[in-house]
Amino acid sequence: MLTMDDVLGQVGEFGWFQKQAFLTLCLLSAAFAPIYVGIVFLAFTPDHRCLSPGVAELSRRCGWSLAEELNYTVPGPGAAGEAFPRHCRSYEVDWNQSGLSCVDPLASLATNRSHLPLGPCRHGWVYDTPGSSIVTEFNLVCDNSWKVDLFQSCVNLGFFLGSLGVGYIADRFGRKFCLLATTLVGAVLGVLTAVAPDYPSLLLFRLLHGLVSKGSWTSGYVLITEFVGVGYRRMVAILYQTAFTVGLVLLSGLAYVIPHWRRLQLATSLPTFLLLLYYWCVPESPRWLLSQKRNTQVIKIIDHIAQKNGKSPLPDLKTLSLAEDVTEKLSPSFADLFSTPHLRKHTLILMYLWFTSSVLYQGLIMHVGATGGNLHLDFLYSALVEFPAAFIILTTIDRFGLIRPLVVSNLVAGAACAVMIFISHDLHWLNITVACFGRMGITIVFQLVCLVNAELYPTFIRNLGVMVCSSLCDLGGIITPFLVFRLMEVWQGLPLILFAVLGLVAGGMTLLLPETKGVTLPETIEDAENLGRIAKPKENTIYLQIQTSECAGS
Image (cartoon, rainbow, N blue to C red; front, side, top):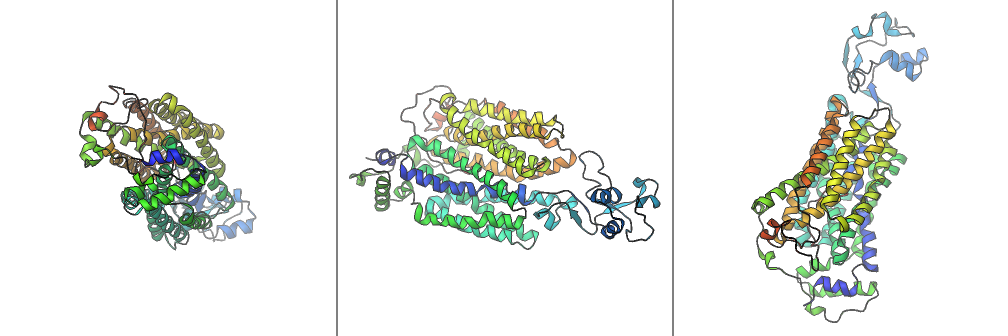
């Protein structure tokens, strides 16, 4: 009896059809980048100061330069790394009074400026930027700066909630329907975000955008891995995520050309409507159709694939069926993930690894964006290192397995964060260089942890195991903005200490996981419990497709 893997082996596991579908679906992965880390440009915080009525007129009358105006009218920066009082306080002075001189106007009011009373910014702020962001438009600074964190947390909350339902939609109504529906809704919500009239509506659209956008990315991931043969699934899965890196590079250039957040949001949202052309370009997954016993459609799609790949149509497709295993008839439950000592250990470690991956990946991006010199170049440099990360994965996992590269990558990411703590802020080039090494390390971790997660669980709870463990990735993304920006208010190096500890501990904990290289995938709980004890050679290795709640674009 033929299986889909048998059929793909005859019509082409990675022929012209699969390559065309792969490149087409990679556009979806690239389009996800502005949603996942677009906060760096949508919500950048420029240098700012209190708007004081009368200062502009006094500056014009006295002929001050900008540097002189700031020196005479704005409080000093305060302690190192402290926002108070320069950005959030102003002198309680009537700048319209006629007695103020043009040379040190405050000298007539107090011999020492520190004796002058300071008050909050009652009239708003002045932002030193030629562009705009949600920070400058909605004044999300000082006491309202936490609202920037909430803006990013909302999209991660959407990822988390959406992952709970998108898997059901894809399994119930098909991968293609799920992809098209989530892409359409995501494109509409992207446009609505760009025209949001106020901050509450902005949060609502951001949350809803997160609910569907990750589902769109995941549907593309599932489709392309189900189109190719067994031997190419790892490769296309890794390269599909590399397309996300292409999106990061394009985002940095687009943000440089379009420095206004509403226009940038429109520029990244409107093109996604073109992805609806997938209706005509990409067929439904034949594996899903086969699971629904829609064999007539399966045969048409297989014939189409054969024709595209230059192969002859197969005459015996009527015997095509799903390869079933007795273990698939078992009913998975959450308790199964903790039913034995080794499964408990693996589940807890994998949860921690997913959480750490998200915190370090998003945290490093936000930290570099908040402390860097040139926002666009720094973002570009750190994005470019994700390309060699994919190359390293593809060239090492078959030789060294998954665990050793995962350990080393966690340690590199943690060590890079630790080194950055001791680098002077003036050595910006060195900070960026070390941050790029950390970014490369955590990118490798992000992609490897999904593969490790899938290979440590038995067949009947594999999907559940990956979904539960990877949900910690989204939870990590929810709290990361608060960790980064609130800790930076205390000291800029404080988030790096947390990142270093998380990364180094993750490296050590990974050593407790068994290596799966050369071992068959576990089919029962007993097999999973014995992983690492008895190594059975892999015969006809099959990397099963899984429905995950994986954080995208890593």
